[in-house]
Image (cartoon, rainbow, N blue to C red; front, top):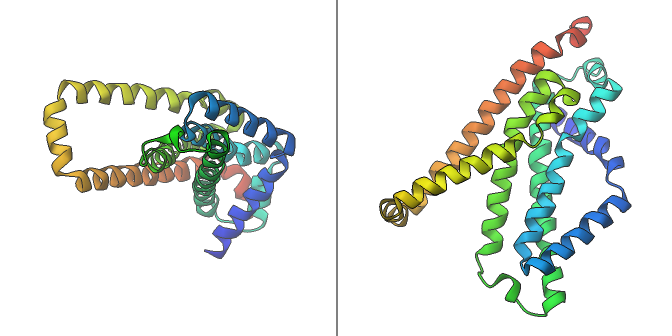
Amino acid sequence: MAKLLSFVKLDFLTVRPYITSKTLIIYLAVTIIVIISARSAAAGIVLLMVYASLYATTPFSVGEKNGLDVLYASLSIEKNTVVMGRYLFAQIINAFSALFGCIFSVGVSWMAAKSYRYYQNPFEIPITIIAMFLICGLTQAMLLPLFFKIGYAKARFFTYLPFIVLFLLGMSIDVVIKNNRSNFTLWYESNKHWAVLIFLIAWLGIMFLSYLVSLIFYKKYKFFIYKKYE
């Protein structure tokens, strides 16, 4: 566990130089405009979490450019620690961006309107945070195996592919629900807790499967780097 946390800390140190005050100001300015235009704090949360999720791939870019995998091997960092660390790092980024996005977006809405009319539904913000956390996790579950398989430089072309897949999947599910609204609504209303539990189990299953695939790819792709240390 200590090595895992140390590796996550190393990833944070890797990303920190890329989070400049200029970039942060631009992101926050755009978010303020979106919140005021959409009259919704939830819109700001979504935007900030999407911005933050992009930084989850930065360690791959930096590592590939500077040959950090050789450093990991020389420090006797196991491959499963590297893979697990990258997944944990991504989820910490998601959680931190959700917390920061909530505080910032609600604060901007309050100062802009001096009321709660921007988010009249009290469940809008927590639902948005939970949904975005799960969505960001799923996109990362699709992207990380690619980065471990072919490297960041080749895989960055597919960065937006998960968003397209999730969009199409969402549309398909929406069509199915609309065509079976009465049956689905009846089942959901009587099985809310089971529905949430099933979704969470599916999400965790996808993340675990993604981790296993990434580990397999990383062992094969990086073997020539680790060979002289093993």
